[in-house]
Length: 268
Image (cartoon, rainbow, N blue to C red; front, side, top):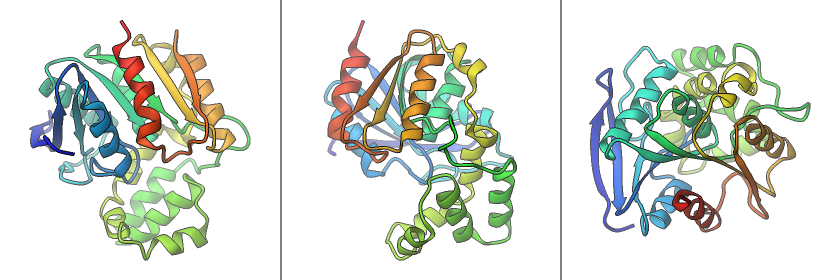
């Protein structure tokens, strides 16, 4: 993608956050999910597709990529990171959140009127018996593995328990070129667990307080529990719109989602 300007902004607690800016037009901020950064093919593809009509800000969440990781962690600090990116964008922006990044976008939006619109891709709340069962101390388990130097085991625990990847699948992933970056970001997996809340339970009270126009999207090829979660999120947010992209799975093709985002973000 040409025309990318890379820089940093400084969050309220002094953490430096790496940001890419591209395109021209109204501001859109992209918030990635677990184990991703702004170079992820889906996020970079979305930035490339949307930058024809918008000024797109894609940033590395704290603890990954080019961003810092000031301790102690709190979800409120991540909301402040998003707020400073929006300030860099001119003071207001539409926000896209993918997967657990959707959970962060929701937690930020309920307190931040600078977020003008919300588009959410497969927020992974656990609704119904078919959703993964997570231990109540999932974040603590991930923290302890990282603190013990067992970063690869923390990644495996998250992938198996939260993402439903088989142990055999994880064994294959360990040999992939992306595995070292996943290990490097292992401490951020506990952050995701804290963003989503204990057991990834649907935060009904928070969702009911969202006032921004909201679009919730799911893939038709994603697990049924993810589609139920997306529908439940849309049902709980006043006036939210829900759509299913047939043939798409959790790792959505940017070419499939960009038209939906374009139509939603330009709607008056």
